[in-house]
Image (cartoon, rainbow, N blue to C red; front, side, top):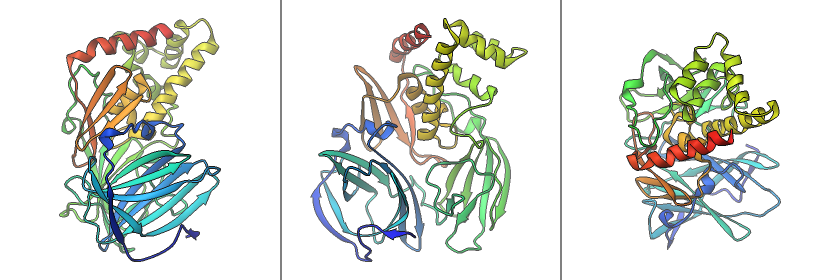
Length: 380
């Protein structure tokens, strides 16, 4: 622990203030890689204490004021202001902070972090409940022994901070063999039909996990707690291998075009030729590939759960339409706006993803989707 942020105290004090109704705010900055403040979090529990690990990326030249608010939902009109709390700075560099916030005797479901910078306000909600399950009493560590905040890892071996050093963890290994999301006028895929558990093991030590698999991890298989972790190759969330680069073309190619590239004797040459044939120069083709796969990378960074982020419903929309102009969040749904186009996601909970966003598909999206794909193809 390098320093203590603000102050260290062991008493929580609350006062009532006006609530933050996120359904009335535009929170598109949650998904904007150029946002002035980027917040990521991981929650764990230990002996009745909720531990919230926070990763903050920001511009240190501009001062930031912060409030912590406790609410029962995303649309509260009254909430509790958390005025005294325990917060430790675990790591700090020029534009990044890694913090640990410890909360006791908290009965609210939602923590809202309010940041004010240059008269602009940013709100980041953190769920203090994990759907119908509890947060685990363990969490994964990076190589430097700090908490792993992201929902994926690329490490060849992984350590976990446990409630007790020798506690056994149970690892359920699944092959992450998911297909890309269906288009917005299609039918949502079933999670269970895609799953194939291929290993179960226990460990109280550092473990080696297999890339392109996801793991559901528990300290007690009879409890309602667990953690889902996707294991990517060492370069994830980027893509580098030609077989990985071909499948994301699903979103803007026909089935025959995709099969032609996949089944070619030399798929790398076929991949390059597809892009070169759509452009007048190698430089233009290379630029288009960079733009498209940068969106794939960002979708992986933002939306990875038990599957790669670009394969999720939000990832599909993000890759094709870009960062939404406007985002409205309610308790059980989130709406993305692109000028006069909107996509609504229902938020459900399952064993592996406590806040899974499922796109509400309908035939009304068909013309919108076809036009957008045509615009992308015409730009090629």
